[in-house]
Image (cartoon, rainbow, N blue to C red; front, side, top):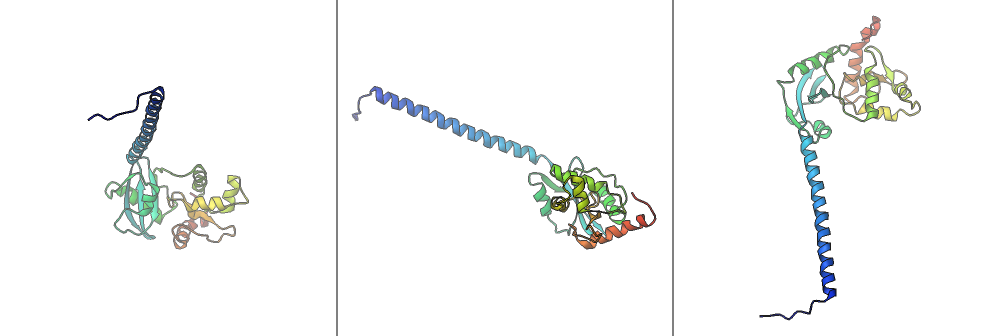
Length: 221
């Protein structure tokens, strides 16, 4: 059966050509969208290639976790073991493959256990410090504080060039995930009294007490 159609005119050809161009534009937009999605997927796959290994340890100040990348220690935190990958590792390394490696990290755990008892010792463990440029600057200042000595938030802020506002310094210190080796426990209030500590003031007091005898004998490490 034949269906009658209107005759093809110049206007019909123009409309048809415009529709072809519109479809071509739509396909190009879709292709770019898919390309961006593909690139994002590939980027995520590359990030997933990073491996973070962790292990648990036990010290006189409680259980702790140690985590390493292929460059060095990325986390050393006091926390209780619950049989799962710690939420803090998931939060800090959301795109990494995280796995338990008690055997491979046994020597690092042993050294960190010893450091808890003698926080003035040099562990010799390489660090892979993750953070903003500002945070890294603050943490580097912390690493220059000798065992047996303390400093204040204001003093660090002054060294950073902002002596009237120590809030950014306080925030950077609070976000340190490598205990003792980045010794945020050596930062106290201006009057010398204890301030807050990510892993509890009880631990901070104990660590400072373990370093105090160095000052009594005139030694700094």
